[in-house]
Length: 164
Image 1 (spheres, rainbow, N blue to C red):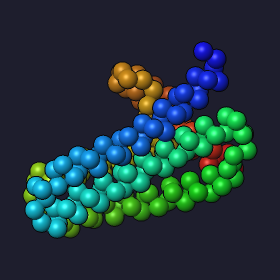
Image 2 (image 1 turned 90 degrees about the horizontal axis):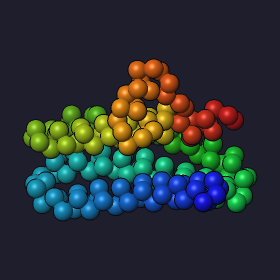
Image 3 (image 1 turned 90 degrees about the vertical axis):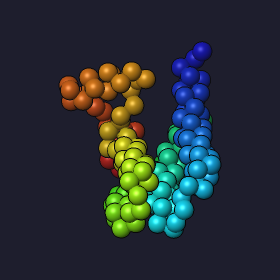
């Protein structure tokens, strides 16, 4: 397989993978929604899930834009930088609000722990998209090695934002 085709396949895989993650998270939310018996529980889970979905969709769109650039290198080049700079700021605000939502809507320990994990996953995804690339291999030792050696690379979005 040619390198170009391999890259296209990988970009589509990343794009659809992020969307599949969003769909599966919401599927499981609706499957277990009946146990969220009061509005505080509902908000405590829904808010971090909305933030996570928002961040994952940004990633999915970005991978799709890169896929389109394979055939049209100028595809949304300036607009993407502007939009993702704005997304980066909005995401930080939403993540900070998420901490308040979790604390102010405490309902029980299980729901709080789950909402904290969802928010932490959102933060990790944000870092992966906007700061440094955290996904190198399916082997966690590869990431640990990069952390120890301080060889993490800037994420693709971060490089594009910084370039302009």
